[in-house]
Amino acid sequence: MKIKQTQVISGLAFVSGMVLMVFELVAARLLAPTIGSSTYVWTSVIGVIIAMLALGVWLGGRLADKRGQLADIAMLLLAAAGAVVLVLLVAVPFLEGLAQFSFDPRIKGVVASILLFAPTSFVLGMIGPYLAKLQVYSLKHTGRLIASIDAMNALGGIFGTFMTGFVLFAIMGSSHILTALVIVLVAISWVVSPGSLFKVRVFLSLGIVLIALTSSLVQRDMHIDTATAHYVVADSKTPRGQTIRLISTGPGGYQSGIDIAQPDSLLFWYTEEIASVVDQLEQRDRILILGGGTYTLPRYLANKYPSSQVDVVEIDPALVDIARKYFFFQPVDNLQIISEDARVYVDTTSQKYDIVVVDVYSDSEVPFSVLTKQYGQSIRRIVQSGGRVIANIIASESKQCQDFLQASFRPYIDNFSIGVYRKYLKADYRSNIIAVFGDSIVDFGAEYVSVPFAKGPVYTDDFAPAEALQFRCAN
Image (cartoon, rainbow, N blue to C red; front, side, top):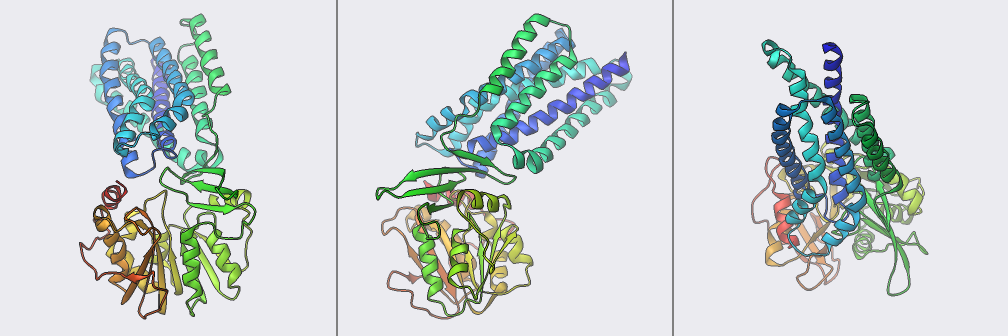
């Protein structure tokens, strides 16, 4: 009997660890469209979940000392399933409402995490002490028995993490993953204790599962989960009557878009400006674009310059299928798509390019790895003599954006003789800025002004406070 109960307890520890990590990863995805997916958001999610786990462990330990029954664990599993169902029901309307308030996104992340994710985390935290109470049958082996629970819980967490990141996000959406968690929790609750409180549990189980199966995250737009991001695809009308299709990964801006009537044309000012700069350069046999989006700019350049080789580096391979399905993307003979992280590619490639276009924004933020001295040196290494770097930067010339703007310029201006830039808005509002760097002068027009000489700190791969700089600039 002891062996059988030990196996059940080990399995429960594994399942609770797995469910927690799957839930945590999905939780961050749920916040992405309305609050964002920055480090601040992840900090909010992880911090709140750990805090509620601790509170759940504290209360669970006291209840386990008084009761310590498998039937209690079955009810806790049902309670966790019910908490996940609540997330399914209220997440989207609540987050859309929260997004309307213009206060600190860090506070938004904490508030959203507390209201949406705290109940599930709290209940899951209560299960561990029960397992420990039931597992310990001999004081002589207490350390070993408790350690076995912790080890199985950790293994479950590892399994849930890799399964979600490598498999689940690639084959189903967040709502379906949460529904699957509900079914798993309800099923395991019956395995743990089939006979106790039978009628009450049948009623609760059927109600929870039916609500999970018939409800979904309320969505007006199309939401697509991949292994690396959560995308929202939406159609809208412009004041001029155009029907445009846009894709975004968060509330800060659109990653790409097309005019449905003219999908091969460029929709945004910054892509048109990059194309204009490329057109004024004589040397463009090999073009590298860091950041693919839905491949509107790469496709445009490849079609316009059929004798040029256009390589585009995009970290998410699933974007190719999204671009084909929703953005009319078709392969072009002289366009090569490389599924790789942009920084890794520039560090390791042996190719050299006449033009490097840098557009590596996720939502409205760039990773810290493109603000460092080492990145600038790698870019310099892969640019041919006489070549150019064209960078899309989202910032302004306002006081609060100066540090981020200088940090964005510095990797290039430290490695190239000349830099010029043009901003989309003349006022000091945060918007797209196109900067061009090279070793010789090219007149791109009166709108372009010289990048000031490098000033401010030199950031490195060891320290580059990208999140803090961009947060200050965004506010």
